Image (cartoon, rainbow, N blue to C red; front, top):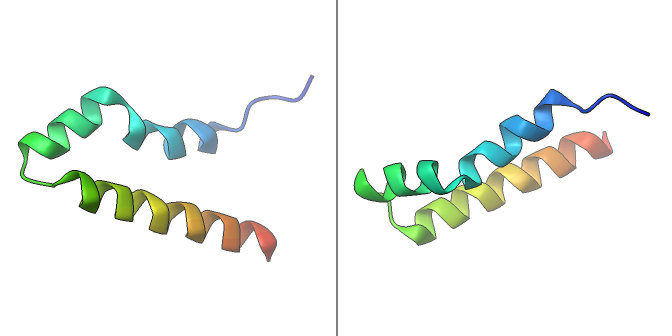
Length: 50
């Protein structure tokens, strides 16, 4: 069995309820959070393709 990649946890952490709540309480709206996560996902996919 392959070992889990620690990068997976790093990439999924921003989607944790506690993190989203903290961001929302800090004034970041859900559209900004979604946009930032989409940008991150696109960057990861692009770098994996290289």
